[in-house]
Length: 261
Ligand SMILES: [Zn+2]
Image (tube, rainbow, N blue to C red):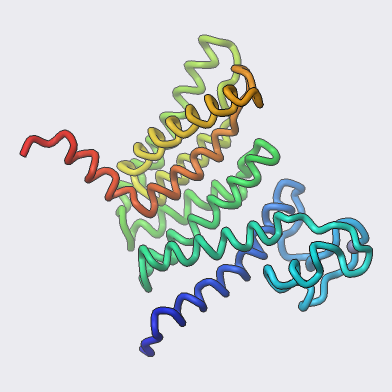
């Protein structure tokens, strides 16, 4: 194998991340509309002008076109460069944590799915089955070759899906309102499949704490009241990313706090 200097490898990882980010933005835009993510090629949503390859270069095209369509000059969403840049950050971060391993590929794909789910949940308050259900299958299949192993993965699916389903069911019986959609249940089952039962427990705790903090901050800044729903999928996404990259370290730190040496 050819050994690249680390800085050059980083540049390749970032460039590939920008390209994938461009694709992820297409997914974020089209999946909630139930459109194909392959056809047609990228177009201006205003005038339908099909983008040439040089109008579709991540980050650069947005900068060169100054955020406007080449044809009709209608503004292009700032989200394109933001999603592209965030994806590049995900790529580099996973590269630094996992290095050139099979786990890198799996956790990076997982991270990309989390990013797509995060933005779609923020926009539409849905977590599409076309992402979460295949995610459960892929996570479980990969667990035969990679951590956490098939037993932990299966337990993760059961616990991840089970906890939220139970809460939703009890809440519904007691308060007669739906606490959350089943999208959250399927998303947490996906997280359990990929990360295993131990880390899905951590994700549940972290996302609840995160949801509490964000909720209090929103109420304090008068952007929300007690009845406002914070899309829980966004919290699960952020917590899962943290658990995927640093979960074992967080659990070891927590265990050390309570161990008597
Ligand atoms: Zn246009």
